[in-house]
Image (cartoon, rainbow, N blue to C red; front, side, top):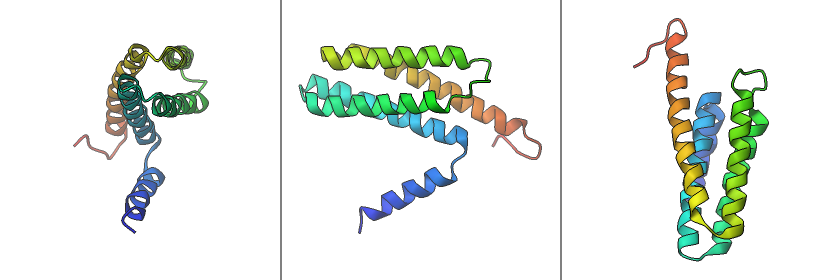
Length: 131
């Protein structure tokens, strides 16, 4: 019963989130799984590392699938996501946490950028406030 509550909360959060909030939630997940996979590699738990790297790869794939191809920065984002995928594959094959750390660093920067963009888009709409 206790396990059902957090899942219900998460389900409701996802269903009521704006596209920008969903992007940020996915980014948070990728960062969390990336950090977990780094710890897994350091602890030589390669099965868990593989699972968590796969979760990051799934989230990056979702970014690619949902990318607005008409956006002026779409091509650059696509190239960045492809680079992330390359780094994650290298990390998984070599059992090296450094490429994952690089991806996590970029994801943290992207998350901050998306947070700022989300704030700006809310502030730009008539009748809304930034606070």
